[in-house]
Image 1 (tube, helix red, strand yellow):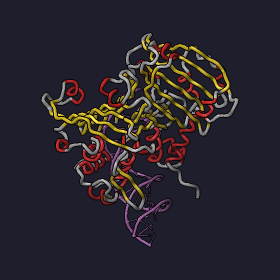
Image 2 (cartoon, rainbow over the protein chains, first blue to last red; image 1 turned 180 degrees about the horizontal axis):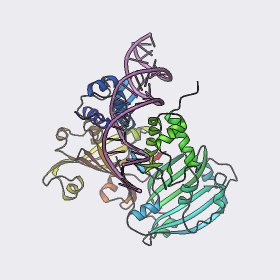
Image 3 (cartoon, chains in turn yellow, blue, brown, orange; image 1 turned 90 degrees about the horizontal axis):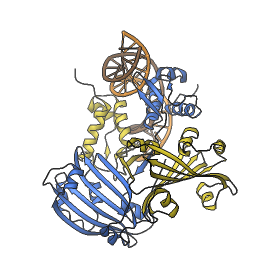
Image 4 (cartoon, chains in turn red, cyan, purple, yellow; image 1 turned 90 degrees about the vertical axis):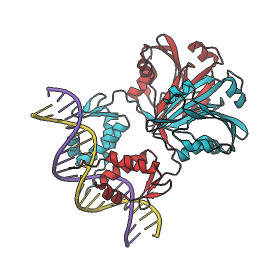
Length: 231
Length: 231
DNA sequence: CAGTGGTCTAGACCACACA
DNA sequence: GTGTGGTCTAGACCACTGC
């Protein structure tokens, strides 16, 4: 008996042909039925191979028009959304959390713009620090839209951070991220133990459930922080 | 006739049960066969729904052990790998490119470690600048393994950057990325027109084809640069 | 209209991990 | 051993869209 054809082997072979320019960029490759016959397998097997290649952006598929090798593939990396406690504990360091500030306030103008929320909306403003082995690792400045998560007003956040609570209690459907290098402002610098103006890594995140903004967070990392990912 | 059950509707319903805590975090959900019976569809349909949820990190699946709702789901964002020319032109600015340095050299020790290549391997070392409307936007320091892409030695890279050539000519199968904030070193600072020590955004990328490293690039962006993504 | 991909079905066999 | 997911098959119908 010969081995059964797997969708992985089909995917591999098509990938090889793309790499070796047997299937040229922009060119339409044979239809599923033809490939299934060539590889001696069911069409569903070819379909799965091509679907994954399409998910990865290497080919583009359209009904009737066929499958085309992507001309200039915009490759995507999967970026794990960091959960600070896990990230710290993964390095073998001990995680510690400290609440610095907690206050319910009217949303300032810039936040109303960011979250697209109404004038006079009440938000919970939190500032906290995350330590790795007692060295300050991240300063978190967070604003939570109380209207969307009323229960948040009852939590004191003295024992654990708002991110852990939100991840557990409030599902989100959409998020936007921004990453940048910045000069440490005096407040963050003081908390992180660096000099004002020193380079820090700043990550910002806004999260929605449906069309309602839940929270905005600005996370400032000490300069040694390095975010990594791979394909 | 009632509508046919789709894998999308199954996925939707399971997602709803996870959100509404019908399926609790950490809990094992019913096996595919049971769900297929409940939803009145084939097991393959349930399988595809659960496979996608697993790809998205919301459930974890193991043979024999079943499907478990992920305790602390690590969500992933898709990060588009920036192609500098597109990124600049997308802002409406004009893109300009300048080659600063081009030399074939023996790979230095740190690069041999990074790329896992042999002693005495020849690499092409390039330094170039990318401008947005004549303001320096990115300084690129790039090393290319000539053994993997011999044709690269014949290209002068005076008209366009190595990234565009590599994307077009040398497919890659694997890449690693690192992002960090750093203090500008004197060379990069001079090219970018900032003061040494100023915060800059540094992106590093190593790319492989199979198990052979193709290239390592360190890209230094002026301080205003902000990388964004969304879910 | 007709070719292509998108999806579902019913059944089958297998690999793995736990009892 | 035994139950669960992983995958393949052969066939079917449908949706989209270019011709």
